[in-house]
Amino acid sequence: MILLFLLYLACGVFAADVVDPKDCTAFPCMIFSDDFDYLDHDAWEHEITMSGGGNWEFEVYVNNRSVSYTRNSTLFIKPGLTSEWKSEEFLTSGDLNLWGMNGRGDVCTGNSYYGCNRVGTATNIVNPVTSARLRTLSDFAFRYGRIEIRAKMPSGAWLWPAMWLLPRNWPYGLWPASGEIDIVESRGNSDYGTLGNQYGSTTLHWGPYWQLNMYQKTHTKYQAPTGSYADNFHTWRMDWTKDDMKFYVDDELKLTVDPFTNFWDFGGFGDSYDNPWAAGGKMAPFDQKFYIVLNLAVGGTNGFFPDDVPSNPPKPWSNVSPQALLDFWNGHSSWLPTWEQGEGRISEKAALQVDYVKVWKMENIDQ
Image (cartoon, rainbow, N blue to C red; front, side):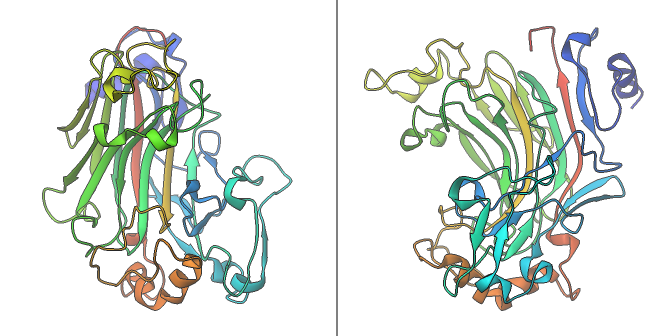
């Protein structure tokens, strides 16, 4: 504890603060730290969108303290119901316009997939769940170093928590050419085969085109040592250098990524495509600055929640249904009680809870 405090002093960083890596004089040097004593809107930007990350998820991301707030030095991202924000009739007839007018925290951040404006109909309803997605895009990004996040996963059917990194400038092209680093993803279901909240996964996404996403080569799934990841706080860590990436849970190594020569050869792409990383180093596309994302998604039709896995409660929608949002909402009598957990309202147990996020520069190399 004394050593950690001295590191704080050496780098001049305290809660919800960012340090220019060029100012580091001793290593490791903490360059980002948030203990969530309060929700620092100078460090975290709320995304405002219904785009669902391209996965046709069921939530609308909003900036509202009912779904994202801090208490007892913990960040809570908790799902809510659009029907409580608007009305149940709004789902089938309302015009949800997120374009905004006042700047950051109010203006829609994702227009793709009709993310800024949707009008509900009897079969294509407005997103029935509210949630939050926070990012450091404008305020903090880093290349190489250590990131550590202590968090507790949510408990509740069809909840999809994620703590991850995206490229700030997309220098190698659109997803996944510029990479994606999923430090941890999980599912809130307590009874969903080997895909419930007893499990977590860590994944890198990369490839010249989305059809050639080679994530299978850089993916691992692991089980909580006891109970589930929704029972207690755990610490996820990534050590990222110019040569490899190592991922840990509670200091136990879960995944090592070393492309040996480069990711192009590692992917076995050969001469059939143009190499977007030709001008990069060994770790390209993971040789650039990435920013931090914390979010809680719900459902979706991309297959993260497969149709063929037995579950309790039963999955109320099919991934090929043209009215998946409606099917999901019509099944709320089965999944909403798992979010409320006997409390009569949505419980904080259904929230992604983050104790802290910390990033260190580990050695004197260019950032």
